[in-house]
Image 1 (cartoon, helix red, strand yellow):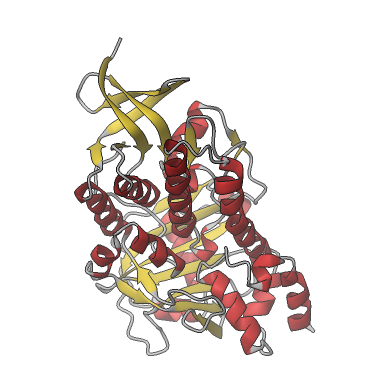
Image 2: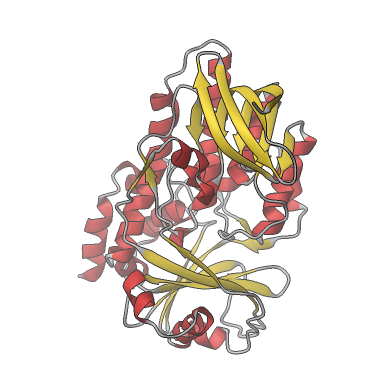
Length: 410
């Protein structure tokens, strides 16, 4: 049997944003926390455009100063393009109270910044560790770990949090995965030296471009602070399968059809290997159990179109840490009422907007000429990540989007 190497209050799988924030929050409460991370940081990850709501969670976790000092690209909104149609949402002009600005980040740097913060605050992090099995009992949870170039070992804890992202460790080990209701899509993406000098391009905003004739195809362009950018295309799987070109040629071919986007990237240097993400939309049977909870993408991932992934991850980490603290204090929290349902409120709001994007309703709203400023501020709040603000009519009743789309179309 593998050697037992310690007992902790909480073990966190994954040192990404959800794992790091959860660990830092629990350490502040006074608990002993171990993070097990399969990779070595810094490492590449997608999801580079943060939402302003994230800043509140980073501030609560004691990580805001480190993020501010890291020199990331300032972000104050989202711009949308369809051919040569253009509109934008300024997140500082939103319905909800709170942060109106944030950053666009190279995730290798951002994730390491957060992990280092968690470690400085007292969390223990072990890199190069693969979780191979877990065993739950009345006394806690035992985790089997396979480290790189060393003998397997076991660690124990009272509770386990899975922040493994697309690795989805616990959903696989516990057979919690279920099919997503969202369509099957492919994302092709890379980092480029963007060489953008066009005065129409605003580096303080993510640019989301709709293909001029196939509205299901869309692109992102996320500028960084060092003259580089992340760019990618999302398309239905069948269109990718029908293509005879390689992945870089496919991405560049679609960019060439992107109208204003194509002009922005005229001088871009594609100097980084292409990456592909498929089958990324996911769901699970449950977000928590007797001895575990799932954070962020490990539980559910919708779609990259509104950059909601990191915000949902940080919200889940904040909620889980607070709920677990109450449990450790003997207060017997109701995880469904205090964790799952509050988390799903925002997820469901984003889901309506993702569905509305792909069926055209939201695109009708975004590119309409007759949007009222009050409605635009409410939509801006959700795009800024404030999907939990129940005072916002489009959070309280997300179905209002259909009515708004009809008004904009008329």
